[in-house]
Image 1 (cartoon, rainbow, N blue to C red):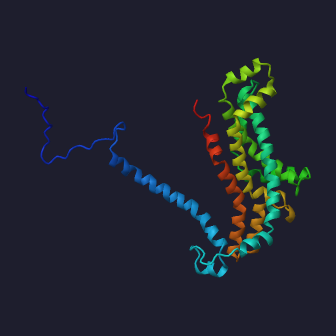
Image 2: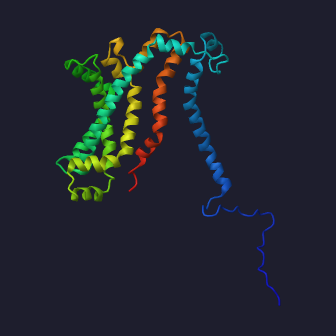
Image 3: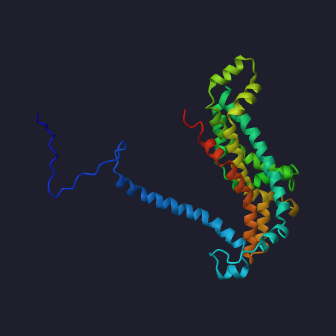
Length: 302
């Protein structure tokens, strides 16, 4: 019995065999690696340019002025915590941090309450001019804060809230409620209507549906709003300098700016103040970065 084998394909002399693509992708591996090399180099350069300023601040905070003058970019050869201690005591970082915490935490809580209730109303209720109201909220996000500086200060002064924590809390809340409301509205629209209708059929009122059904499901969005507004307000300088003018009422960023003006020839002291200032923001971001990503992407795909 003769076994017939299929003829092998004839290759033309001098012509290389075609490259095979990866199974299931339809792409040539070598070519795809070449295409990825450029974006990867660009992303690495972007990451280095973003991270190195933080590394530079850390290096400078542990140097002496003499070592900083000798080697500006190099890591410290003999680290010292003298300027961290001076920034903490002479710069009164602890007192300024308490002022910032009072203002920022109160403003974040007010923003969460206002944006969650307004977002639920815009997402689930039917009332006249609902679309125009949401459009107006989005339009308010387009106004730069510097344009509002003079009228906002005039209102705060007329209310007698200059050098008062409440004045800055109200200013911060009014500036960030539009974005938070838009984000909460977009997220709450993705809640299945079957859940709210089932709660209504069980006898729950509008407030009960909001507190027992909508808010637990909106936890990622609430954490996203809280994290973003905390980071923004913690680093805010313009209105903090404008509203809280008394030295004992200053926020941490305003105190850091005054430290820079007073000790402009002492870079290690300024870097130590910057390092102490950014530690709470970095800690909040590290703790809530997963919730931040999930809150920004959840509800985007239905």
